[in-house]
Amino acid sequence: MSTFRLLFFFFTLFIHSAWAQKPNVLWITIEDTSPQFIGSYGNSDSRTPVMDQLTKEGVQFTNAFSTGTVCSPSRSAIIIGIKTYELGTGNHRSNYSIPSWLKGFPYNLKQAGYYVTNNSKTDYNVANEKQFISEAWNESSGKAGWWNREEGQPFFSVFNFNESHQSRTMTHPYDWYVENVLEKLPKQDRIAEDEFEMPPFYRDSPEMRKQMARVYNSLKLTDNRIGELLEKLKEDGLLEETIIFLYADHGEGMPRGKTNGINFGYRVPFTIWFPPKYEHLSPWGVKTQTNELVSFEDLAPTMISLSGGEVPHYLKGRILIGENRSKEASKLFLSSDRSDNGIDLVRTVTDGRFVYSRNFMPFMPEARYIRYMEIGEIKQIMRTDLENGLLNPVQKSVFLPREPEVLYDIENDIWEINNLVNNPDYQDVLSEMRNALDEHLLERRDVLMLPEGELEEISQTTSPYEFRENETRYPFEEIYAAAKISGYRSPDILAKQIELLESQNPIVRYWAAIGLKSQSMEDLKSSLSLLEKKLDDNYPYVSATLASIVYEINQSKNAEGLLKRSILSDDKHLSLMAINYLLYSDFKSPFVDAVREVYDRNGEYNSAAASKDFLGSVGLIPNNFENR
Image 1 (cartoon, rainbow, N blue to C red):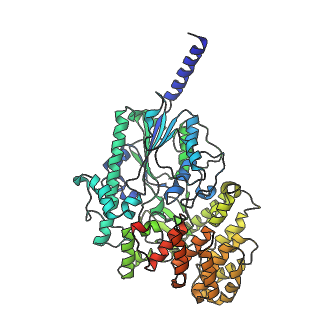
Image 2 (cartoon, helix red, strand yellow; image 1 turned 30 degrees about the vertical axis):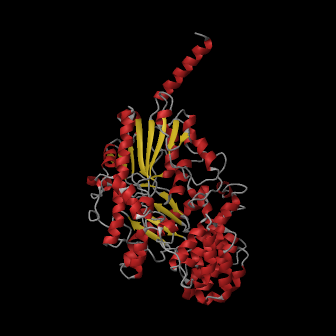
Image 3 (cartoon, rainbow, N blue to C red; image 1 turned 180 degrees about the vertical axis):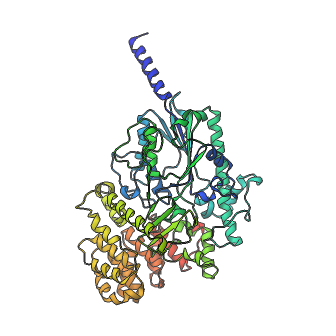
């Protein structure tokens, strides 16, 4: 044997020996699912035996949270391991720049010898996504899996099941659901419309039950698909060599869940299953439950550490398992921003029992207009019931402006009905949560406090992630001081926001204007003449916001003209903002032609979707699947 061949033999032997020490990892992600609808989390009406068995044999997490409430921001945090309000990836379906040196964490696993595959959803919400995907994965396709690796090579494989996605549970037409979900289930697997309890914020009617049954049957189909995948793993002789993660990408894809910064939008079912060979890696043991706080920020460092790689310094999440396990967290910080054409900005802190959310734009209701949801029959039923006076106060509240802050005790109020902010018994908890959130946002320098048009402009020359670190260009403390009072309603705060309209910093003025939108129209009338003078502000996001306020007070021609120009602006973000404001106006009719022009452009950006919501809200186009 030649020296070269001998060296190659020993090198190969060394590699295979190193591989043998590393566990395989299988990730099973399901879509748009809250724990309340899974059997192992206490829902006796649900039929999820495969997931329930995996959870029974593994470690069940009762305090696992997505970092966001809609898929693409959530997935950017998962794949990169950095919070969306640091990366600038919080707005659903955007493509802003990230630093070129930032990689998806599977890239690090490849360097550690793993064969990494993704089957097959990406939706990472970053610029240059094709290159990003190519660098991250050995394979990313509908055919990808562990089967193409070298013999003995450890694998990290992701399988995403979309059978429980919002499209299945509410937005695709009912006939589509019957053909693609219900008829894929044996009759004995199907959950009937009278076999479950309704969440209290939905009206318990036959029409709503017909829609809610979709959730249960879609989850049953998901469970069946997971069973098929696990059987494949077993047939390949890999079950006892593989650690399995099972979790949802965010909360329930139904009205008030997905897209909303409350527990119902964030909390997810989450299980880790260890084969006997790797049980020693579990700090919790097996066949157990833990209330340890876990968020998607933790997944990247955990996987890199498990693979034997060095966790990059910029990853601030925890390592959950293995020798390098991090100290447990006492709180998690979460976020919810624009989803499709529905603008929003919510920041949340939770200790597992209490969930505190700060609504910076509370003039936007929980059931805000989002075209992808408006086409769903369940949303149309809810709006019809609202118009006909059939909703009780809890059910009606999802269509009303929100409170600037909410505090829910999930241990005693899983459906988040009782806001404890004004309850004297919980003031210490409220103060602790407020302060923790302020400190965290100041530390992380939340770049999504910028209007979205700024993020797009920044991405032309750098990245929002890098931009936010420059104190001169982004004086975050000054900006956050203005944003921090947005949403609160009082004469003193109104006066402060009027004062902030004089700031030299346009972003401070922007947050002053956003804050004024939450004040009562009656209180704003005393400042009307000053607001009218400020309509000529040279920062369009300020002038358009102030115009929406003035217009609601007196329907002035000056404000009306400014809003029309904003709607028709070449700045798609400004157009979206203006249409969103007018969606909730009592005086829509003068804007129909301008909005229709945006609609007729049939553009791909969200201002076109918002225009459909606007025209649908005044009865000029139908709210149906074809009009999405």
